[in-house]
Structure formats: structure tokens, C-alpha cells
Image (cartoon, rainbow, N blue to C red; front, side):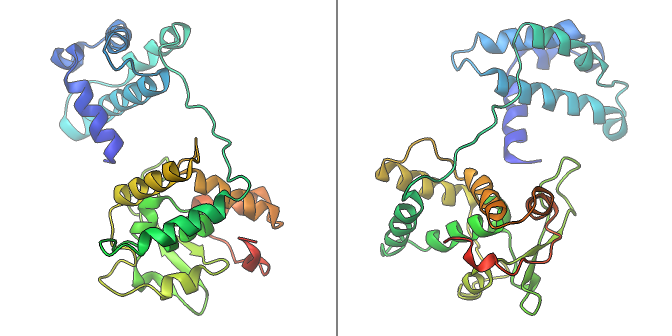
Length: 261
């Protein structure tokens, strides 16, 4: 499971619903669970509660096949109309944030300066560029491996890429556009991974740099949208761009070297 799912399930364990027999949980119990969560001091948003319900539903959906517990997810499905009517759950808001003005150059300069500190071992500048050029999630970037680079084809295999059907074994071949290959090859070979760092450390460093620059409402994950938007601006179709950001199966376009211009 991913970090979010583990955290969510641990939060659910602290609620009264965790004391009920799973075979007796009804749709009313699901609604009560959300009402109880809303009374907490943290006041989770409808989007957060939607994640909670999704995790509960998954537990019930796999309970029989994995744990031989005679239960399914019908109680959660039956609760959805009430949860939506009461506005207890909602879809995450679609983000449209892109880099504006000279924010890109500001970030690149500041991240390069951050690397010059004697205690810094992470190539923030290069990881930022690779995230932008490949449209990969930061966790996927930190999992890139030397053996998966194909210099002749200018591609790299991205392992266990996030997918609605599960990430394990979901490998895809990604074109190394622009200066991506050169950035990867100039990294020191410390172990099998090209960037052997924790993704949380990368995003924490990014957030600190962004705050010092006074750049607001920009998340590291927004780089995926920024990179995809730049591909479309270079002339790729929406379908071709989706193949890069989702499956990675695409021959690099000839004009990709101008990605950051």
C-alpha cells in the first residue's frame, strides 16, 4: 500500500467504526463514521473523507478473497447517495496551477544554490528538471534505475508506475525528451537507483525553497501538469501526451529539445 492508504487506515482504526464487526457494518454506519470524523478537531474536508470511504470500500472488497471474511462492499455503495446529499464526501478539486512568469528560472536558480551547501547531497536542480521533462511523479523519479536506461533509443523504463489497477508490475517505457538523458547520465553512480533519495525529502526541500521565494500555491505534483502542458504546446496531441504521462509508450518527437524554452 502507498503512504496515504496506510495513514488513512490507521486513522480509521481510531474511530468507533473500527470496533464493529465488519460483517455487520451497514450503510448507516458508514454515514455515521463520516459524521463522527467531521466532529474531530482536524475537521477533514469532503475530499479527505472520500479517501477514507475509498479505503474502507477496498478493505471490504478484498476481505473475502484475502481473509475469508464473508463480506462485500455493498454497504459502502448503498451509503454513497446519502454521503453525497449531505456533502460529506466530494471529488478532489481539479488543479490548474502552472508555472508563471519567471517562476521556473527562480526555482532552478534557488535549487542550484541549495545544492551548493556543504551538507546537501541531493541534486534538487536536476531532479526538478527530470520531473518536469518526464512528467513523472517524484516517487517514480526516485525509483529510476541505471539498468533501465536505453541510450540508443533515448528511453527509460519506469517501474511500478501508478495506475488505477495497481502499480506493482506496471512498468512502462518512457521517452527521454529534451536534455533528460544528459541529466541522468551526469549523476554519480551510488547504487542501482539514479536518484537514491526519499521522495519526501525532495518535496520538503522544494517546499522550503518555494516559500523562501514567496511562490504560493505551487505543489511539486503540479510539475506533471506543467510538463504535459508544455508537450501539448510543442505540438503533441492530447492522446500522445496522455501516453507519456500514463503509459509512457511513445516515440520521442523530433522537436522535444525545446521543451524548456
